[in-house]
Length: 109
Image (cartoon, rainbow, N blue to C red; front, side):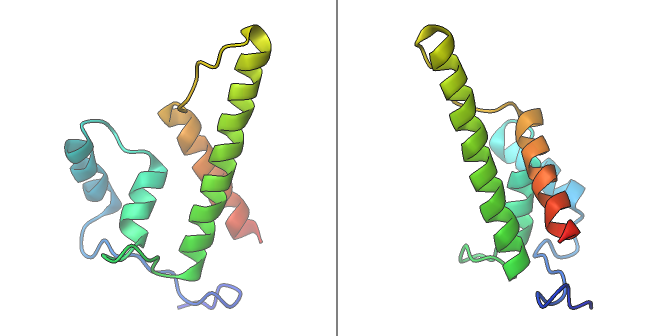
């Protein structure tokens, strides 16, 4: 039950299910493997859509910001190459990488 720099103890809403079980259920539900960010959102938001704590919300906001920046950079590069925009989504690996970078940085603070 650490203070985490004023953010209180770490919380999640997965109950007795492991995150792996949540991920497997989401894969069936989505018809594809979920990203780490999608699993995080599922396990760190309440039924009303609010986050379980401020740290989870900060991680999610930083993840969305970095993801949008990466997509904008990819679109800009595509348009510079030939004037056409092709990539509107990130691969699961790229998305997971962005999320993990955010989490590592958030715990380094």
